[in-house]
Image (cartoon, rainbow, N blue to C red; front, top):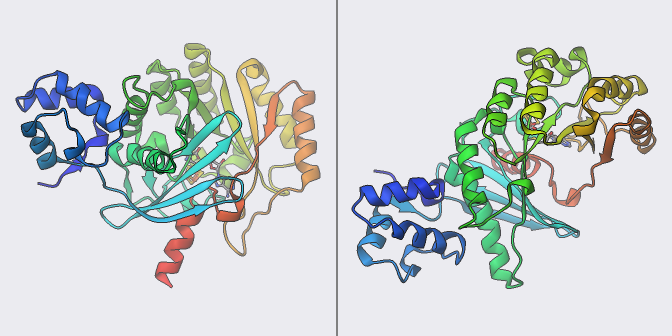
Length: 354
Ligand code: SAH
Ligand code: SF4
């Protein structure tokens, strides 16, 4: 029997599992505390847990399924981790420093099947979903890295924006959210967590129905179907006439603000015309819409896309602002260490194949 990561269990699941295996209910709370508050790295360090229970845990679970392959630090304090999974697949996780705290960007799948033409992750087909434990472990590895530095820093924010489409691994992603949000554990506030999706409309309805306070970001990148289908093939399955009603449902149900991500690709989607179309697409929800303009990070040497010029970015921003749309140009982190989605991993894979 292969052992699984204990970090994949929610507190309720851990409690049921321990009770089913003859342990007292209160043990779950103790184990949880050792995992997420005291943050031990071996079961044997859980010193107030009885020997039988430790043995039981050791027989069925592991604490480490991620092996750190590379850790790169950037001048701006960004740290990028490349992890090897037990099956040899590589994933990446990024720690970023902001004025408001420390955020971690997690990966949810090995590769991605959505196939956006501008994304390094989409170039490598999805080989599998990550388990809930593998997603939680990314946060734990970064937190252990901070614990070792001894400055008492903690991961305060999480963005689900690494490799993969989180809504294509929905259940594990939702377990992950519950685990990191648990007040008895890491206690990362729901309002400090953002999940980004390329727009799987059916899952947006499910996400709205979860009734959690986690933020939602939509990777929109184009204001009309023709252009969106050209750069994101998911738009065939979920064109704007399916996506926008799902977004309206989410807004009505949660009354929470949505971030719309828009990568600016030179001469592709950065004209005034697209800015005006975007403003009219979001116009009726402008009080709850926030546009994040993202400078493009080239993916390959002879990339079909280029980053928009500074002037074009500012002009796009101005047009949106004049139409009353809230927007911001995203600050970049760790560009000197390939911190954009999937870039370190794809480089490493190329190196291994060479
Ligand atoms: N699959 C989800 C979440 C992961 S991708 C999604 O698409 O939303 C998260 C974000 O990474 C995308 O919205 C996009 O903003 C960003 N991204 C991908 N490739 C990029 C690139 N080459 N340059 C800049 N940002 C990129
Ligand atoms: Fe997948 Fe997101 Fe990259 Fe598109 S942008 S290929 S959905 S990871």
